[in-house]
Length: 345
Image 1 (cartoon, rainbow, N blue to C red):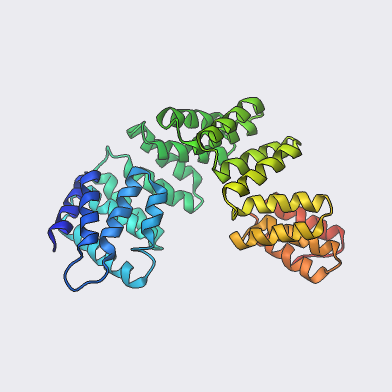
Image 2: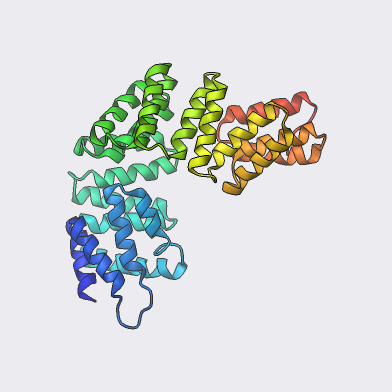
């Protein structure tokens, strides 16, 4: 074992993230003799980013440690060794849980997180990560329970508060979601995404002017964020302010020319104007960005229907039904096809 590896392991178990990061970076630059690539220090960096709530950075390290089967096996052996040597260390079990959750073994991670909770009952981290597993499994009440516990143990845990707000919003409990978003804004006032979350919840609550102000604050903080422009465009479109909506969708594509949802939205604008070729092109650009975009498939279904190409239309409607998560949108397509005397496969 190299000194860097030993230092990294010790700092991880102690929860000293800055020192663990320094050791992991040094370890990644100086792998053991005879090895060209070692996924273990990259997984250590992944874990550190997750603990800090740096999710983009965590994802960027994922490819270096948890995509190849050989890398997964090496990381697994390393983490199992740590747990065997340090079975009373809560962070050993927590790191094991993170490994299992990210390597396709979400259900098995639950036991590891529960072990961490037993060993460190005052830590918010295992509750937060356990909540994510419940949320993935669509056990929303169980997820809410764990997010609430994480927030109780650490009121400054912004990711837990954010996810708790989102979970409440999914249940339609806006009066519970909005206070969580406001608390996150106090913790992270310069995070544009938090202002968008608040704006969406306020809009659902019918408080349109405060929602608009939150969207504008998000754009002030990050004027080149395609997702924020798109969300504001969607807000305007729902209010019938179509010119302003189109302006924001165009702005989203200026910020990110490959932002698929904006291409889909523009496709529907063009379809409504009977600009069929422009709509077709926009929907296909959307699918280049996301080949599971239901709105794009739905739009292509409409395009082919207008063109009298029933077989192609039905194929795209079927894909839209497959990928739409909203049951009302699925039902709308099925009802349309029923009225036309057609049914999707």
